[in-house]
Length: 321
Image (cartoon, rainbow, N blue to C red):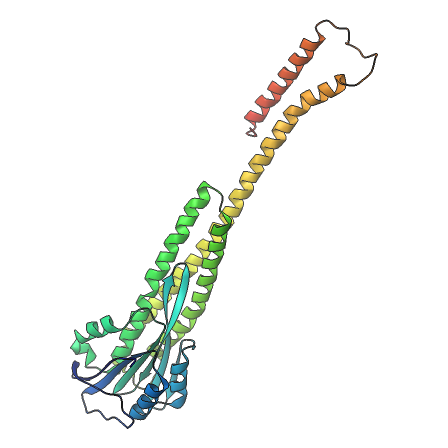
């Protein structure tokens, strides 16, 4: 069975467990049902459809597990899809949580999520004064739980990028490090595509008049919306940092290459002096001036040393050596 938990809550407190069945299920006033599933089978979803009158299209989407964040209204019920995210190395792995919300029931269906809702359920059960308000408060709790997992993940990626930035200032980036920067940039861009629809979902829960969402619960959704926008802001800054790291790496590498080029040019100019003089006196002519000079060899060596010394001194002052 993939049913993680299935309970009736009466006046905000857990009452008894609910078994899946192939017939309609009724609750009394002051009660609601919270059922949590992970990777459910089609038979289990069919049972839930019969019990709570779930819309077939919503059930199909929940089984698919490949939806973008969205919110659909089916009569007096809501169907909400949100994306979970966690780090696997430098890669962001995504999961999906589909939530069916009725006036007296909430069903969460998880696909590929790294964190279970056990801790969240226990936390909400310790606040029966909120839980007794019904499924919309549980919906807020689940979305808030998912969104709260975004920021630590983004901050971890930010720390890794800043480490690369420190390395850039010390030495050249290696090929693998350059590949890593581009991988992280792709992950950030993909995550931004998830945050946009997530912000729209929470914005609709905050501003629109939707079934099963009480007016008193909207301030809670507004708080979650603020969290999403904060993550969007951090992710936008992270993308800028990744771009600046790569640009800084290119600029520093060009600067180092320019320094090496200047050094080579300076040494080439210095070595050109003895090469030119030696080339002239190395020519095979019988009648050349100074060939009979007694101290000509030493004079030529002195001229070479003096000229090379002057050039070396000038290049040092210019910062080329």
